[in-house]
Length: 196
Image (cartoon, rainbow, N blue to C red; front, top):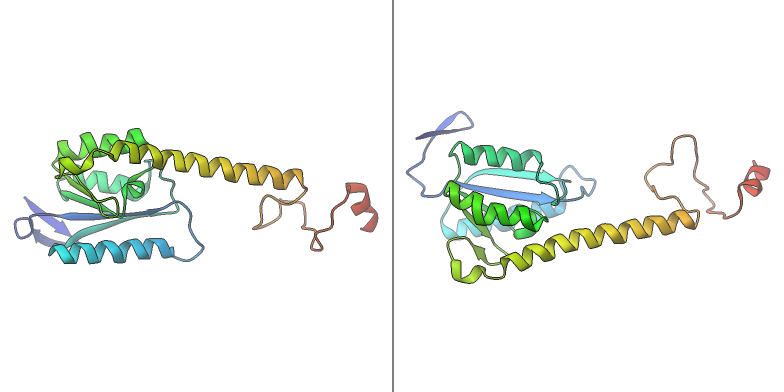
């Protein structure tokens, strides 16, 4: 099979593994690319260089939740697996692949093995070729999903409490037609209208 990357033919036999690194972070930190994504990239690149391997392609979903697998670059990566372009996927940890334990289990236990794809989660010391060391992966996947649900519940609770206290839930910009009370005064609507 002849592979093409960036318009150049790639000899698939020169490197046993055609490696995809997958980077994901749920929330964008406001920069063009988040610090966490940069950190993940540096860590995975160093790991791959230590193994004497080369990266075939990079897939980045910055600002996408791990609870949803309909992420643009994740889907592109799956398409490249289907096309036979890559045969190894490496992530920082299992939670970067996703935070839905059933879906992550599907990819690590069924999809990747059927497609002949080796999967490595560096920080979790997970390697799909090492069956002995992967006994706790389902539990870890469950905890990753629980963490996402717990965080969501806590954020919702904080936002509800802010609303009950009369504080804005949206700190970026006021809701259309309203302005923020710059002095952070509290009071009834009548008191505020009297001042206007």
